[in-house]
Amino acid sequence: MSHASTFLLLGGAGGIGAATARRLVAAGHRVVLAGRSAAPMDALAAELGAGVLATHVADLTTFDAVEQAAQAAQAAAPADAPLVGVANLVGSILLKPAHLTREDEYAQVIAQNLTSAFATVRAAAKVLPSGGSVVLVATAAARHGLANHEAIAAAKGGVIGLMRSTAATYASRGLRCNVVAPGLVRTPMAARITGNEAAEKASASLHALGRIGEADDVAPAVAWLLGADAAWVTGQVIGVDGGLATVRSR
Image 1 (tube, helix red, strand yellow):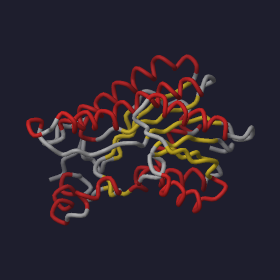
Image 2 (cartoon, helix red, strand yellow):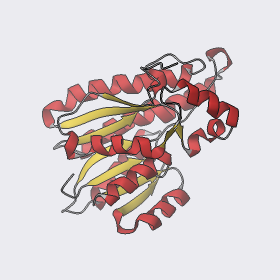
Image 3 (cartoon, one colour):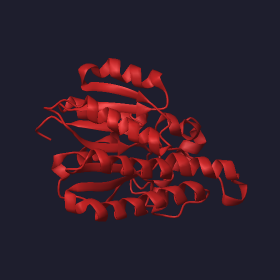
Image 4 (spheres, one colour):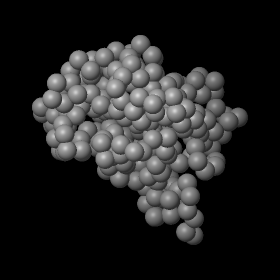
Protein backbone atom coordinates (compact mmCIF):
# COMPACT_ATOMS: atom_id res chain seq x y z
CA MET A 1 0.00 0.00 0.00
CA SER A 2 2.42 2.65 -1.24
CA HIS A 3 -0.08 5.49 -1.77
CA ALA A 4 -2.05 6.98 1.09
CA SER A 5 -5.69 5.97 1.20
CA THR A 6 -8.64 6.35 3.54
CA PHE A 7 -10.51 3.38 5.01
CA LEU A 8 -13.77 3.24 6.91
CA LEU A 9 -13.66 0.85 9.84
CA LEU A 10 -17.09 -0.05 11.20
CA GLY A 11 -16.63 -1.26 14.75
CA GLY A 12 -13.26 0.41 14.44
CA ALA A 13 -12.57 0.84 18.15
CA GLY A 14 -13.15 -2.81 19.07
CA GLY A 15 -10.32 -5.28 19.52
CA ILE A 16 -9.66 -6.20 15.89
CA GLY A 17 -10.85 -2.80 14.67
CA ALA A 18 -8.38 -0.88 16.82
CA ALA A 19 -5.51 -3.18 15.85
CA THR A 20 -6.40 -2.70 12.18
CA ALA A 21 -6.60 1.08 12.59
CA ARG A 22 -3.16 1.18 14.21
CA ARG A 23 -1.69 -0.92 11.40
CA LEU A 24 -3.21 1.20 8.63
CA VAL A 25 -2.18 4.49 10.20
CA ALA A 26 1.36 3.19 10.81
CA ALA A 27 1.53 2.46 7.07
CA GLY A 28 0.66 6.07 6.27
CA HIS A 29 -3.07 5.72 5.66
CA ARG A 30 -6.06 7.49 7.19
CA VAL A 31 -9.07 5.95 8.86
CA VAL A 32 -12.59 6.95 9.75
CA LEU A 33 -13.98 5.11 12.76
CA ALA A 34 -17.64 4.26 13.26
CA GLY A 35 -19.20 2.55 16.25
CA ARG A 36 -21.94 2.68 18.84
CA SER A 37 -19.90 4.31 21.62
CA ALA A 38 -17.99 7.57 21.41
CA ALA A 39 -15.52 7.01 24.27
CA PRO A 40 -13.40 4.17 22.82
CA MET A 41 -13.29 5.85 19.40
CA ASP A 42 -12.24 9.14 20.97
CA ALA A 43 -9.49 7.37 22.92
CA LEU A 44 -8.20 5.66 19.77
CA ALA A 45 -8.37 8.94 17.84
CA ALA A 46 -6.32 10.64 20.55
CA GLU A 47 -3.75 7.85 20.29
CA LEU A 48 -3.50 7.92 16.50
CA GLY A 49 -3.73 11.67 16.01
CA ALA A 50 -4.05 12.91 12.44
CA GLY A 51 -4.38 9.35 11.20
CA VAL A 52 -8.01 9.36 12.32
CA LEU A 53 -9.95 11.76 10.11
CA ALA A 54 -13.28 11.45 11.89
CA THR A 55 -15.37 9.36 14.24
CA HIS A 56 -19.03 8.56 13.73
CA VAL A 57 -21.38 7.30 16.46
CA ALA A 58 -24.18 5.12 15.09
CA ASP A 59 -26.17 1.91 15.45
CA LEU A 60 -24.45 -0.06 12.71
CA THR A 61 -27.24 -2.63 12.48
CA THR A 62 -29.42 -0.31 10.37
CA PHE A 63 -29.09 0.47 6.66
CA ASP A 64 -29.45 4.22 7.09
CA ALA A 65 -26.85 4.48 9.85
CA VAL A 66 -24.23 2.53 7.91
CA GLU A 67 -24.91 4.54 4.78
CA GLN A 68 -24.52 7.77 6.75
CA ALA A 69 -21.21 6.51 8.15
CA ALA A 70 -20.02 5.70 4.64
CA GLN A 71 -21.04 9.13 3.39
CA ALA A 72 -19.24 10.76 6.32
CA ALA A 73 -16.09 8.80 5.49
CA GLN A 74 -16.31 9.81 1.85
CA ALA A 75 -16.68 13.46 2.85
CA ALA A 76 -13.78 13.30 5.32
CA ALA A 77 -11.32 11.68 2.92
CA PRO A 78 -8.88 14.22 1.44
CA ALA A 79 -8.19 14.38 -2.27
CA ASP A 80 -4.72 12.88 -1.81
CA ALA A 81 -6.04 9.95 0.26
CA PRO A 82 -9.39 8.89 -1.23
CA LEU A 83 -11.77 6.44 0.39
CA VAL A 84 -11.00 3.05 -1.15
CA GLY A 85 -12.06 0.48 1.42
CA VAL A 86 -14.64 -0.40 4.05
CA ALA A 87 -14.28 -3.08 6.72
CA ASN A 88 -17.15 -4.29 8.88
CA LEU A 89 -15.67 -5.36 12.20
CA VAL A 90 -18.98 -5.28 14.06
CA GLY A 91 -20.03 -8.51 15.71
CA SER A 92 -21.11 -10.46 18.76
CA ILE A 93 -20.68 -13.86 20.34
CA LEU A 94 -23.52 -16.07 21.58
CA LEU A 95 -22.69 -19.58 22.76
CA LYS A 96 -25.94 -21.46 23.30
CA PRO A 97 -27.57 -24.53 21.78
CA ALA A 98 -30.54 -23.75 19.57
CA HIS A 99 -33.16 -25.01 22.03
CA LEU A 100 -31.95 -22.58 24.70
CA THR A 101 -31.65 -19.57 22.40
CA ARG A 102 -34.41 -16.99 22.83
CA GLU A 103 -35.89 -15.30 19.78
CA ASP A 104 -34.64 -11.88 20.88
CA GLU A 105 -31.11 -13.27 21.30
CA TYR A 106 -31.21 -14.78 17.82
CA ALA A 107 -32.54 -11.55 16.33
CA GLN A 108 -29.73 -9.58 17.98
CA VAL A 109 -27.08 -11.97 16.64
CA ILE A 110 -28.49 -11.66 13.13
CA ALA A 111 -28.68 -7.87 13.36
CA GLN A 112 -25.16 -7.40 14.68
CA ASN A 113 -23.46 -9.89 12.41
CA LEU A 114 -25.44 -10.39 9.21
CA THR A 115 -27.59 -7.28 8.84
CA SER A 116 -24.62 -5.03 9.61
CA ALA A 117 -22.61 -6.87 6.95
CA PHE A 118 -25.38 -6.50 4.36
CA ALA A 119 -25.70 -2.81 5.22
CA THR A 120 -21.94 -2.46 4.77
CA VAL A 121 -22.02 -3.98 1.28
CA ARG A 122 -24.99 -1.83 0.35
CA ALA A 123 -23.31 1.38 1.51
CA ALA A 124 -19.89 0.54 0.09
CA ALA A 125 -21.37 -0.08 -3.34
CA LYS A 126 -22.68 3.48 -3.27
CA VAL A 127 -19.55 5.29 -2.06
CA LEU A 128 -17.01 3.20 -4.01
CA PRO A 129 -18.38 3.49 -7.57
CA SER A 130 -14.91 3.17 -9.10
CA GLY A 131 -13.91 0.09 -7.14
CA GLY A 132 -12.07 -0.66 -3.95
CA SER A 133 -12.40 -3.23 -1.22
CA VAL A 134 -14.97 -4.50 1.26
CA VAL A 135 -13.84 -6.77 4.09
CA LEU A 136 -16.33 -8.64 6.24
CA VAL A 137 -15.70 -10.86 9.26
CA ALA A 138 -17.07 -14.38 9.70
CA THR A 139 -15.85 -17.08 12.09
CA ALA A 140 -14.25 -20.49 12.01
CA ALA A 141 -17.57 -21.76 13.40
CA ALA A 142 -19.21 -21.02 10.03
CA ARG A 143 -16.71 -23.34 8.32
CA HIS A 144 -16.50 -26.19 10.83
CA GLY A 145 -19.27 -27.43 13.09
CA LEU A 146 -18.76 -26.39 16.71
CA ALA A 147 -21.23 -27.22 19.45
CA ASN A 148 -23.40 -24.43 20.85
CA HIS A 149 -22.64 -22.02 17.99
CA GLU A 150 -25.93 -22.34 16.07
CA ALA A 151 -26.97 -18.68 16.02
CA ILE A 152 -23.54 -17.20 15.33
CA ALA A 153 -22.75 -19.90 12.76
CA ALA A 154 -26.02 -19.14 10.97
CA ALA A 155 -25.28 -15.41 10.89
CA LYS A 156 -21.66 -15.76 9.85
CA GLY A 157 -22.49 -18.46 7.30
CA GLY A 158 -24.79 -15.84 5.81
CA VAL A 159 -21.89 -13.38 5.76
CA ILE A 160 -19.83 -15.81 3.70
CA GLY A 161 -22.66 -16.28 1.21
CA LEU A 162 -23.21 -12.53 1.06
CA MET A 163 -19.52 -11.96 0.37
CA ARG A 164 -19.40 -14.37 -2.55
CA SER A 165 -22.47 -12.90 -4.24
CA THR A 166 -21.15 -9.37 -3.66
CA ALA A 167 -17.80 -10.30 -5.18
CA ALA A 168 -19.61 -11.58 -8.27
CA THR A 169 -21.99 -8.64 -8.61
CA TYR A 170 -19.39 -5.89 -8.37
CA ALA A 171 -16.30 -7.51 -9.90
CA SER A 172 -16.88 -5.76 -13.24
CA ARG A 173 -16.35 -2.38 -11.61
CA GLY A 174 -13.36 -3.42 -9.55
CA LEU A 175 -15.05 -3.62 -6.16
CA ARG A 176 -13.58 -6.60 -4.30
CA CYS A 177 -15.20 -8.36 -1.36
CA ASN A 178 -13.55 -10.86 0.96
CA VAL A 179 -14.02 -12.38 4.42
CA VAL A 180 -11.64 -12.93 7.31
CA ALA A 181 -12.74 -15.88 9.46
CA PRO A 182 -11.01 -15.87 12.88
CA GLY A 183 -11.02 -18.44 15.61
CA LEU A 184 -11.44 -17.27 19.18
CA VAL A 185 -9.61 -13.96 19.60
CA ARG A 186 -8.78 -12.18 22.84
CA THR A 187 -10.92 -9.05 22.51
CA PRO A 188 -13.35 -7.20 24.80
CA MET A 189 -16.18 -8.99 22.98
CA ALA A 190 -14.74 -12.37 23.97
CA ALA A 191 -13.93 -11.40 27.55
CA ARG A 192 -16.58 -13.70 29.03
CA ILE A 193 -14.66 -16.64 27.59
CA THR A 194 -11.07 -15.46 27.82
CA GLY A 195 -11.61 -14.11 31.32
CA ASN A 196 -12.33 -17.61 32.56
CA GLU A 197 -9.13 -19.65 32.85
CA ALA A 198 -10.81 -23.02 32.36
CA ALA A 199 -12.87 -21.79 29.38
CA GLU A 200 -9.84 -20.21 27.75
CA LYS A 201 -7.78 -23.38 28.21
CA ALA A 202 -10.56 -25.49 26.69
CA SER A 203 -10.89 -23.10 23.77
CA ALA A 204 -7.15 -22.99 23.18
CA SER A 205 -7.07 -26.78 22.95
CA LEU A 206 -9.44 -26.68 19.97
CA HIS A 207 -6.95 -24.62 17.97
CA ALA A 208 -4.18 -26.66 16.36
CA LEU A 209 -1.58 -24.04 17.25
CA GLY A 210 -2.48 -24.42 20.90
CA ARG A 211 -3.58 -20.91 21.77
CA ILE A 212 -6.37 -18.46 21.14
CA GLY A 213 -5.73 -15.53 18.86
CA GLU A 214 -4.81 -11.94 19.54
CA ALA A 215 -6.22 -8.94 17.69
CA ASP A 216 -2.81 -8.38 16.14
CA ASP A 217 -3.01 -11.86 14.61
CA VAL A 218 -6.11 -10.89 12.63
CA ALA A 219 -5.50 -7.23 11.81
CA PRO A 220 -2.77 -7.90 9.19
CA ALA A 221 -5.20 -9.98 7.13
CA VAL A 222 -7.87 -7.27 7.29
CA ALA A 223 -5.40 -4.54 6.34
CA TRP A 224 -3.98 -6.63 3.49
CA LEU A 225 -7.39 -7.38 2.01
CA LEU A 226 -8.33 -3.72 2.21
CA GLY A 227 -5.27 -2.54 0.35
CA ALA A 228 -3.78 -2.59 -3.11
CA ASP A 229 -1.49 -5.54 -2.38
CA ALA A 230 -4.62 -7.73 -2.54
CA ALA A 231 -5.86 -6.18 -5.79
CA TRP A 232 -6.31 -9.61 -7.43
CA VAL A 233 -8.12 -11.21 -4.50
CA THR A 234 -11.91 -11.34 -4.31
CA GLY A 235 -14.56 -13.81 -3.20
CA GLN A 236 -12.25 -15.45 -0.66
CA VAL A 237 -12.52 -16.61 2.94
CA ILE A 238 -9.18 -16.13 4.71
CA GLY A 239 -9.00 -18.27 7.84
CA VAL A 240 -6.96 -16.66 10.62
CA ASP A 241 -7.88 -19.20 13.24
CA GLY A 242 -4.89 -21.14 14.50
CA GLY A 243 -6.06 -24.03 12.35
CA LEU A 244 -9.43 -24.34 14.11
CA ALA A 245 -11.56 -24.78 10.99
CA THR A 246 -9.28 -27.13 9.08
CA VAL A 247 -6.59 -28.79 11.22
CA ARG A 248 -6.59 -31.32 14.04
CA SER A 249 -3.15 -31.87 15.57
CA ARG A 250 -4.19 -33.88 18.63
